[in-house]
Image (spheres, helix red, strand yellow):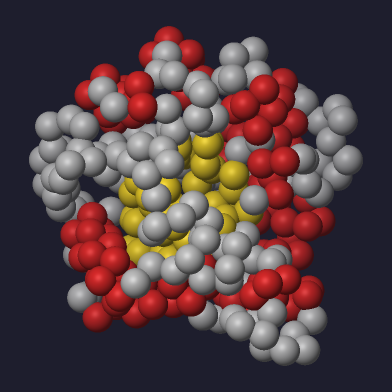
Length: 291
């Protein structure tokens, strides 16, 4: 009963990784295949910027082994432009754009909020309440909003639970009310390490713990040293085992230890200098050594 841990990177198409992580001469179309042989999961970043095609999701699923998971980043049109209000049509289009085509490899959906957006309980609660909690519910919502979707997928091979994570970047989210709301909604509050550029919260709010590591000393640049990897490995192993260790980044009374193990997903986003995949491999090995 030690839970499940997946470690990966935020994206995988970076040319700067060629010759460092990806072997020289590896075709661009085979990068995901290569990475999925060494890591467990990946964030799909392109969905944040624009609607994708279902054919792309099918290609990604086919390129990865059984058990590989994709976290899908929610549309910035919903989170940054509409700021979570009046988004039912946009949410339907987002879901119709292809995530369901991942089948069993579809992991959680990440909603990253802009740093200028303060805590607004009514706005956040209203948005979370409209999110479909299964792939069947998501397919139904998607089917109602296929306009302006170039290659829609509005069916699911099986009705599975659909989970969510929320990454807050405004300091006003440092209140126990946030933790209380997300626990009630079973939504993960992202543990976001951003070199001090935005707040970090490590409260456990769901059966999923979602971690994004953007940089130890500089946002998106530089690597995590061995001591930092060791510290994060200890935290990840504890979360997976059902523990809820407190720290200076804990903003509410600790959640009682869970009777069940948790799923922990960790994504390195320090991609600018090519450190992310190497750090991910190091953390995966460090966590495995503790389990």
